Image: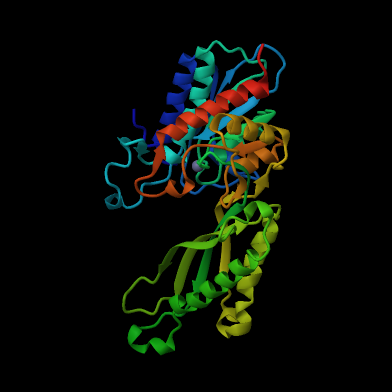
Length: 395
Ligand SMILES: [Zn+2]
């Protein structure tokens, strides 16, 4: 069954209901509830939302253990990003198809494969007759791609666990830390006039080139000295512009340019400091160009506001996962921080030791012909099942 669960669409709820029914059929204790995004958005620490959404659904499914063993949370987001240019796809993005061992389709890699892997780990244990001492809780969340409202809501409801695996695409490596990501909007002012007299106006587009240059310098400075967990990345904390809109007429010098982008936040860096860093860098433009003294670039922080987060790489829950996966696969997984924001920071921030460990290469996520290797889905499910036995204990 194909559910095009784009963030902000009704299908985002449909896929949550689909999992709730499936988990119910599997004999798990399912809890499903309505989320009011508008009410959550009023909270001061709300992590943001970039698509209009008037409703959302939360779903958890508990497989109770027999005793007082530790609780393992397995959490996957069910929302996906838009397909982008459909001509860049070799088929319908929302009808997954196989090509060799690859499964291709929007959301396969990020992260329906991982969500399937965590679910099938539980199924495998159930069908093998395993009785865990601790509980397993499966959680399906919405809105991860544009801020994390689903996990934010889950944490607010008081869900706790002794460890959590989020099977986001990590190529079966361990990712216990995430840099943050703050979405921003810039307004660069110009002065409109007829294009035939352009030197008497001020082009917001031309002013923006100075802004871009300054942002590149800032990105360079912010990536000069990074945490050892992030050293594998070319630019661990990218500062990127994603949209630019300017002008409203071909023969008019544009008086306004609006650009949107995302600022990477370093591990352990307070988000307020990262925001101030960007605002101060843009304020300095006034020293090079008096135009900016009279018309400072306006900065608005909106949408996803992902703080960085981490679980210490030597946490026992992580060491155990590394050992279990090494025993099954023959090689110890690499362990490093991810350069993107994710739900990990909300869970780690709530005191739940959390690691991302899942099938798929994150480069395939959000890309045309997004894919995941089905052998990796099975390998992930196998490791999660074995980990659950080792972590929760068995009778
Ligand atoms: Zn994801």
